[in-house]
Image 1: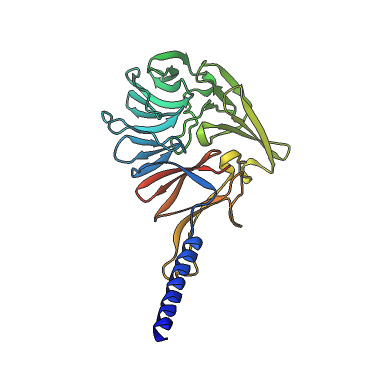
Image 2: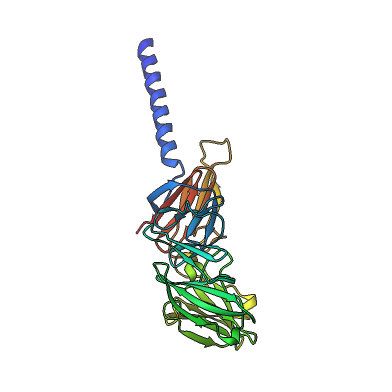
Length: 323
């Protein structure tokens, strides 16, 4: 009799253990709303142009969309920028370009005794401003996909030697913008070198090189965003441009917040690192919601219409939205 009771107690204890394990597994926080796409070893650096993670101490970059890793081992130092799907490195009178897809690499030598500044970048052309001479004057030079000069034109006198508008994070616009003394803006098509004069506005560069002109009109802030010189979209918000935030669309409309997730059966510690996507009272809900649960630290690197790229400890991982 005692033996049967012992066996019954042992079986019951075993069932409790199994049930606890199953419940624990079912309630453990996990990634939701996203599917893994690729992963690669991370580099210590910063995100440039919202598109590539670039190492601090070396010219190594990881494309945050495709996971492609490029290395310019023969190039040291320089000012780095992202534009037209390329990592661009300016060193005095030399410009190096490398496609983030790993399929192209070129070097361009600028005119001697000139100060070079990056202006804009399209898929096939990179534009450089070259200023020099006596008196100082500036030229705009288009560089093709093979590193050869494709066109050259004098910078319009209306903008003098004004510096171009580029993103603060090394993000080059797909349409060049040169401010003038009276507030008007000269726009430049990188491919054709066509120049257009726009009314007074404030120019800024958004994600993936989108150039936006903001102007106050009739108590509203009117914003025109240029994908190319001929492909634009316009939106408006109430109030002056300086007091209203620019609108966000597509993947950018979904915001990501770092938090911690805990489970009821483990009262110790502060939970697992979590990225909440477009969920909760403090987040903007866009087209997608979900979460990533991973190691520590966990940091969002890019969010777009196709997915989310994060740094999870020593790895960079790309997730796509579940349809």
